[in-house]
Image 1 (cartoon, helix red, strand yellow):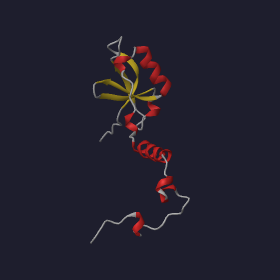
Image 2 (cartoon, one colour):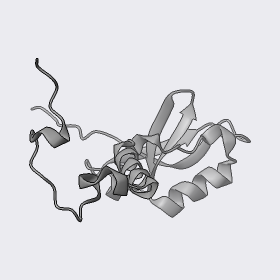
Image 3 (cartoon, one colour):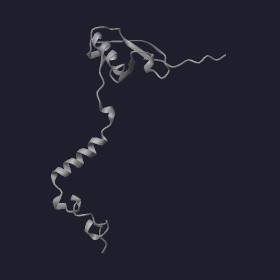
Image 4 (cartoon, one colour):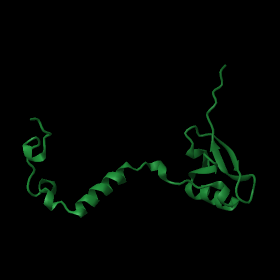
Amino acid sequence: MMHAPSFTSGFLPALPAAFPAANPAACTSAWLAAALAAFFGLSLPASAQARPNSLGMSCAQAQALVQREGAVVIGTGPNLYDRFVTDAGYCTSKRSKPAWIATRDTPQCLVGQLCRERRFRWR
């Protein structure tokens, strides 16, 4: 009769006695909690962070956020967002243009700059 290998059947090499998994009775809930926290903590995506929403900020708050951070992604509506910068130094193309967004108190608030693509001239 065939049966599934287990830890005691010699399928895996023996673990040292100091290792808690070698003795299931010594495996406490603290070890289990630490293992689960490490597993789930490392598997969370970085994109789960909430981005600021311009429609929930005043114009002055949005301007201050861009000035303080230098470069920041701000939501401008449902599923809409953009990256706003203080100057072209934050852009890979080293080119930028003024950026206006709607805020809670102003329909068009100049918050900073938007990076723009470098244009090549063909001759």
